[in-house]
Length: 546
Image (cartoon, rainbow, N blue to C red; front, top):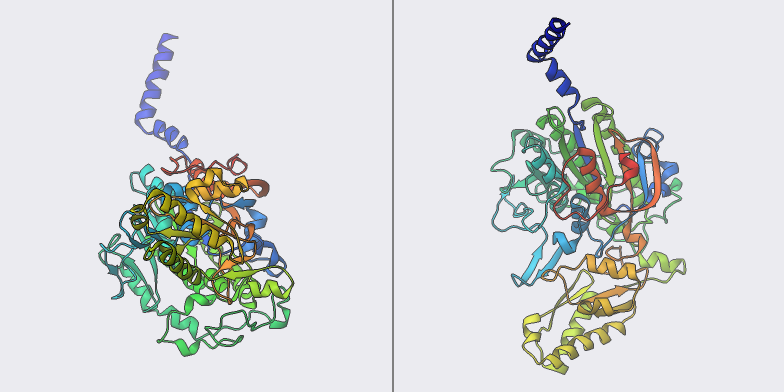
C-alpha cells in the first residue's frame, strides 16, 4: 500500500512537470472579455430609446441592445453642469468634476489666471495635419480612467484607443496611458492625434485618411431615410427656430462641400458612420481583441450633439439622425460578432448628457420656456460694478452657469465691499427673466433649495476651476440664443441618460432602480476584476454582475 501511494505521488509530480498542472492553472485563470467597447452617444436623451422605438429596425442596433442586453432605465447624472467634457470624464472615471477637475468644456482657471479648454495642451503638437487642432492631451484630467486601470492591471499589455470627432470625446475617455487617441480635423477631413501619444500617424491611419471618406459621404447628399411625411415624431421641416447651416431644409445638397468644407460633416448622420468606419479600421489594424489581454476601444459619437444643438430634439434632422444611427450600430455589432466573436466582447452604450427642447418649439405648444443671454448679463454686471464700486472688469465671465469674479481685484477691497459686490450681482441676476435662483457658492450649505440640486452643484464644484456665483434657470429655460438648443442644467431632460450593456456575461433584463453615471466605471472594474479609477465614487450595478 505504501508503495502504491508512493507511485501515485510520483505520477502526480511527473504529470505536473509535463504540464497537467499548467492546464489546471489555465482553467483557474480569471475570465475577461477579449475586448471592451464603450460607446458614448453625445447628446442622447434617454427618451430617444423609446420615442423612435417603433421606427428602429427589427434587426437594428437599439432593439438588439434593448432586447438582448441589460438596460439601466433610470440612470442619472449626479452633478452640474451637464456638459460634454464632464460627461465623458464621469462615465470613464466614476468620478465628478469636484474630484476629477473637468468642470466644463472650458473654464477660467484661477491658478494660471486664464481661460482653459478642457483638453488643451500647448506643450504638444498636432500629429497628422498642420492645424493647431491636435495640441491636445489629458493633462487637465486629475484622476485615472477605467482604461488607465486596465492598462495598469495588465502591466500595459492591454491596448487602449479612443476615437471621436471631438478631441475631448476621445482623450478624456481613453485616459492618460492610452496607446492612442484620434479625433477629427475639420480643416482637412482627416483623423489626427497629438504628440502626447505618437510622433507620427501609424500607416493604417494614413491609409484610412487617404480614402477621403468625408468626400464619399458628401457625394451621397442627405435626404430623409424614409418619406418625410412619415416623420410624425418631429415638427414639420424647416422651422424658424432651427438654425440653417446646410440650407433651408431637406433634401440637403452636400456634394457642394466635396474637397472644400469639412466642417459640416459632423452636422450630418454621416459623422456617425465616419466614426464607426474608423473604429473598424482600428480594430483590424491594431488587432484589438486578438491578443492574450483584454483591449479597450472608447468610441464617442459626436454627431447627435451637433445635430441637436443646431436643429433641436424635435426636428426631422434629429429623428432621421437616430434612425440612421440605428443602422450604423447594427452594422457595427455585426462586425464585432464576426471579428471578435459573439459573447466575446463587452459593450456599453450611454450618453454624456441630454438636451432641452428648443424654447420656440415649447412656446408654440404653450409650455413656458425662454433663453437667457449670458453676454448681455455679463456686460450689465460689469457696468454696474464700475458705476457702484469703481471696479473695472469685476466679472471675468459667465461660464457653465456660474459667474467667475475677478477675485484678485475684489479681494483687494474691504471685506464689506467684497460682500456688497457679491450681493449686488446676486440681486441683479435674480431680477432677470428665466433666473430661478442665484447665490454665492461659498454659502451653498446655507442656501435654501432642493437637497438633490444642492448635491449636484457641490459635485460640480472645483474651487480653482469653478465660478463664484451659481445661476439656476427656470425649467425649460436655456442660456444661449433664440435658435437651436443646449444643455447643462440639473433637469431630467439634461441629466437622464440611457445606459445599455451587451455581450460578454450580460444577461437580458432591465432595472428601474436609480443608478448614476458614476456607476459605470466601478461596474466595469468589478466585471474585469481590476481596481476602480482613482477618483471613483460610484457603486457597482449588481444587477449586471450577478
